[in-house]
Image (cartoon, rainbow, N blue to C red; front, side, top):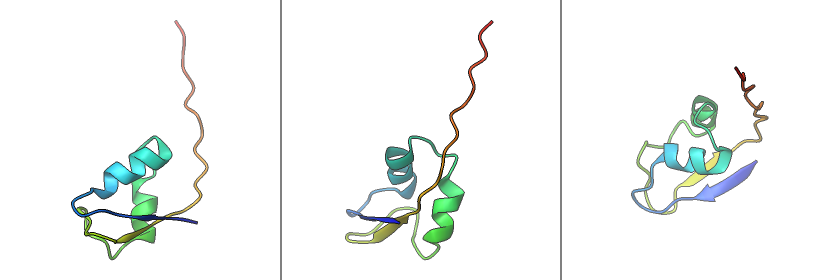
Length: 61
């Protein structure tokens, strides 16, 4: 599991999107970081679990 050390005022959803490229896993990440507030403080540690993300299928017309 990776760790991210936050800067003051950074939002948890921003970190999740930058790391995973999607917010579909936000609830899973939040589960590993239940004590954090949505807007982080300086040096908060965010745990980023390994989550397999399935690519979405694109339907071509």
